[in-house]
Length: 74
Image (tube, rainbow, N blue to C red; front, side):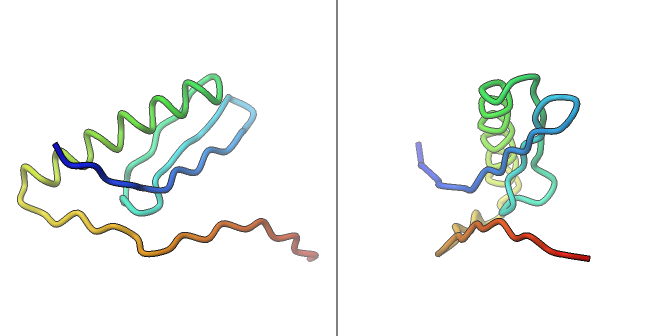
């Protein structure tokens, strides 16, 4: 069994929490609580990676991840 490290972004919205993995296009989920969204994105990443491995695709790992929050005046 191999281990991989991916980023997960979890955002609160009016319906609960939205989570996605920026390194895996189309890998996203939601949850009513932060913890549920975190569990769901872990499951989604595992399924996404398993599918890519079964299809013979490479699993690339990010070398560096930076997250920041910006305030923009318009």
